[in-house]
Image 1 (cartoon, rainbow, N blue to C red):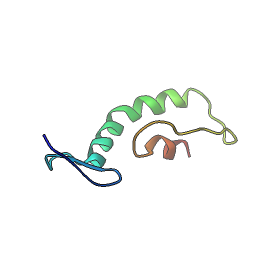
Image 2: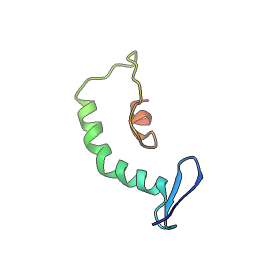
Image 3: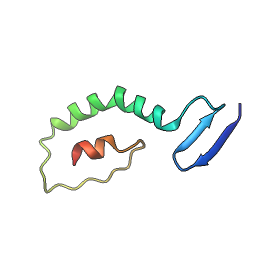
Length: 64
């Protein structure tokens, strides 16, 4: 298997898997559970959060 790095965030494995598509699929699977858990925290507008996870920022956007 060959891996080619063409630009930040763009990894291809044998030209088949696009990294952005992979991250989108992970967000589709895991974001509903994450947002449900975060909703139970009664998050307030003045709170601050460090985004330390991997991904494309869907949870950070949801928090915003």
